[in-house]
Length: 84
Image (cartoon, rainbow, N blue to C red; front, side, top):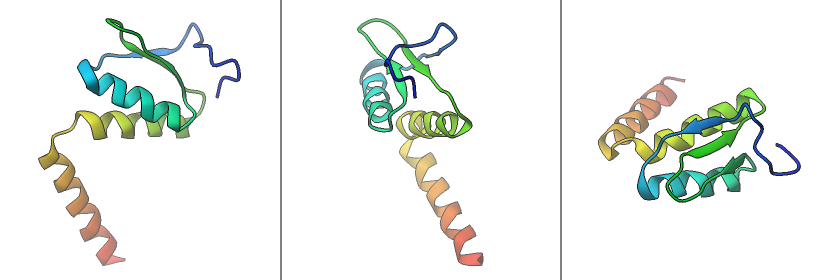
């Protein structure tokens, strides 16, 4: 995490609309991932590790995927875990 909470010049912009952007922003803040968000601008995220990339991907997917898609994924995970 960037200790000054400033976004680096090579940060990534994530185009998410409306309230979804703010949901992602707040969750990333909870996870300690450096990000900035303002009205009428894209969410800017600065990741510094593969773990943070996976966390950002997971948060964005959770917010932008349909309920049906998330239910299918959960069922698939349950099926896989019952095999082991």
